[in-house]
Image 1 (tube, rainbow over the protein chains, first blue to last red):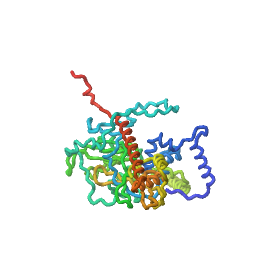
Image 2 (cartoon, chains in turn blue, cyan; image 1 turned 180 degrees about the vertical axis):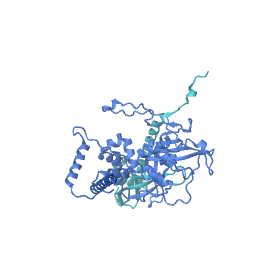
Image 3 (spheres, each protein chain N blue to C red; image 1 turned 90 degrees about the horizontal axis):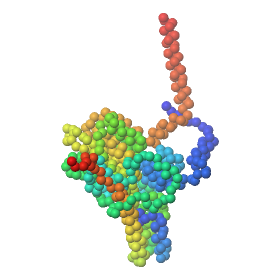
Image 4 (cartoon, rainbow over the protein chains, first blue to last red; image 1 turned 135 degrees about the vertical axis):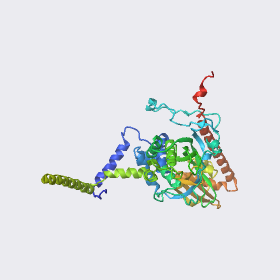
Length: 368
Length: 140
């Protein structure tokens, strides 16, 4: 299948751009949305665009959303395209999520954990009823949130540290002789993929696809029995070592979501029964994404842990080749481009098949 | 540098206006926006993976007396990076501007720690103590 090169249509294309601009603006009687408003009040949409656009910049992501009329995948495309125009200055030191300034932290494994469970700003315990008060702008109170007397403890350990000490949780080790960290923005997908490549792929991957795969693994098209060992949301410092300085400097904080899944593992010839791990990390407040990522990461570790790969979510090539929503959306939407020659060829083919079939029929009748 | 990198452009502008005299400087590297590739840790191993990139602005300048200042700030605000680099340079001088700048930085630091504290206390107000239903039963 291929589309054909066509010429012409310039005026129609230009007019289509003008039509987009008009539709984007909507009713001129309604005040225009500012990028600042999108960044402040559509924060979770901005987080998703940063996460899958793979660039942490609230203003750029909000601009992309405004330009794309709120279409997340189109906004992600815009952000990825802009990214290619910027130089890369440095590679950060590894983020230290143990030192995160916590905004949310929960574990499904233990009721009492050092540092406690912190719900944060979650929709989980809301009633999911439309709030008609939001139909009209309300005067802004200084603060709606309650303020506790004391801040949270800093640098609290993982919720499941107590059983880690008993050796019941897999001790993760880095693969021996790992060389440079794989970078999907510089190299194409390469299989079999190391965990570094897989995690980068999933971190950039489409939230819907990743969460759908995770769901399939939970529903029976997979072998996942996961518990949220801990999920935490908060700010972590980005540190780099600039060449001209030669020492580490902290250049600011970014918000990330981290999820550590613990998965029931019955043991193998090589390893005793224990909880194995899946890991998810994503930009912004994006818990659904980080959890999906952790479940899919664990599912794709099947070969490493000696499990038979029987389901789509355990098939590395199937998963990693289809996570990217730019590629997926691009391939699907290219079908709207002219395929006139292909179609003519197929049309001819179908006519020929029919002729042959009716020819056979006539031949048979003649033989009888 | 960590404190200056976290100061907002408005805060830096205000501190700049409050300086007794505007220091002159030349660029060693004019402000430039680009990306820093952010690495995450692969679970709890020593290995890392590439999470994504974050926009960053960097610059370097030199005061008339030869003192240099550097800045790396998140985002694409070049003026913010410029002022951060300027204060970084001023801090390293041995005169009264250094002590004035030191005061500015400690004020920034204080403001930043208050912001962090407030954010953390708001999160702390959502601390939850779940109890299993069996525990909630009245004793027989």
